[in-house]
Image 1 (cartoon, rainbow, N blue to C red):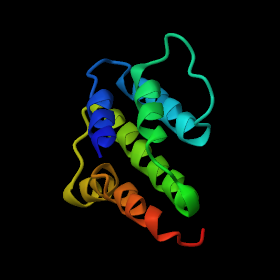
Image 2 (image 1 turned 135 degrees about the horizontal axis):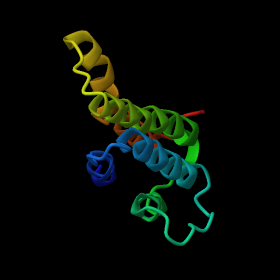
Image 3 (image 1 turned 60 degrees about the vertical axis):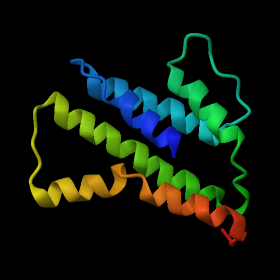
Length: 121
């Protein structure tokens, strides 16, 4: 869960290139999750090492596919938020709810609860 909060803070960077930076962070984080043994490049944004560190303590077992899938949606939702901020776009309640369902981080958290259950993929 701490990683989710950290990722949220990292993607809240307020620069004109915000959406592009958020997408780069998503790409890095998902690369770490998909390739946990891959050495991280020197000078990479801190999210790569933070993701690798958190991922080391997680044993994915049978829920690996579900975890990657839900984490991909979770991280992509932050790119959407960054695009909205960069364009000064304010969502209506329905639109906000759709994005918020992903940014809240509940879905990846539910999958973490499934790790110990050894559910089939």
